[in-house]
Length: 134
Ligand SMILES: [Zn+2]
Image (cartoon, rainbow, N blue to C red):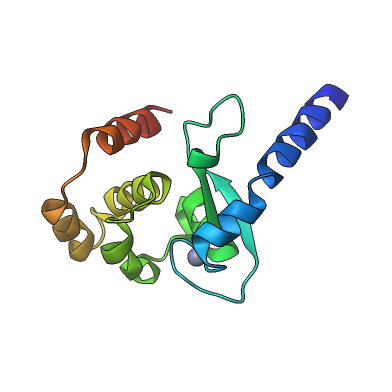
């Protein structure tokens, strides 16, 4: 137990190193919904690497994180901003967006249409494969 907690704290410290760079990258807004003036937290995009990796981090508001983590709390209407973020220049954000879009595609036509228009580079495609298997 104690060991697990220690490891958790170490990981937390490892991730916190990225806080400053992430704040800059995100422009102090949630990297998905672009809300500002809200508390932002680091969300690691799976598959989570053994060592904390800046490129796997997304800086997100609590509402986005909650809906990513708890499928039952998802509100498809909330996610219209995906039409922009599926093209995001940061691979971690693009991967998260496309993944979420795929989750919603069965429920809402706009998500399915968005996926049809999408072109993904091979690295992003490969990351998505790994995410779906993780
Ligand atoms: Zn958000």
